[in-house]
Image (cartoon, rainbow, N blue to C red):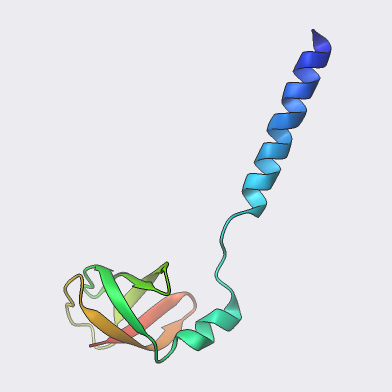
Length: 88
């Protein structure tokens, strides 16, 4: 009985380790390539929201602070950390 508990515990621990390492993280080199790219607004920007770019969801803010409706195509003009600055 104790061996079953040890095996199950070990399997659960390995599963948690694999899940922790499999998380998708945005790399710093990718951010630089995003400036100048087009993105589609997922959640309205008022002035902050989210955009889809290259299949990834990013936090974004309109560069001039204006409202931008969802499904609008915008251009990435800059970034602050992992927050994209976009313009129509």
